[in-house]
Length: 68
Image 1 (cartoon, one colour):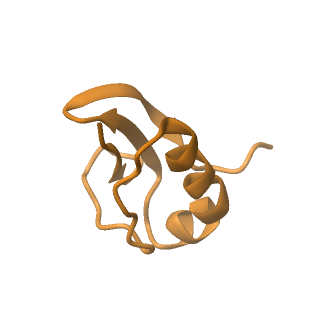
Image 2: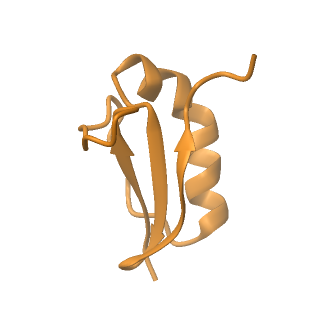
C-alpha cells in the first residue's frame, strides 16, 4: 500500500508541490507530513489536496487555507 498526495490550485488545476512528498506507508504518516508542510505548500501555490491509497482517492479536496 502506498499513500500519496495530489496537489491542486483552488480552481482544480494540478500543481507541483513546493515540498516534494515521499510515498507513505500509512495514512497517519501521510497526514503528519501534510500537517508539517501545509503552509509551505500553500505558499507555493497549492490550494487543496487529495489523499489516495494506491489508486483510490480516500478524501479530498481538502483546502489548505488557514481557518479564519
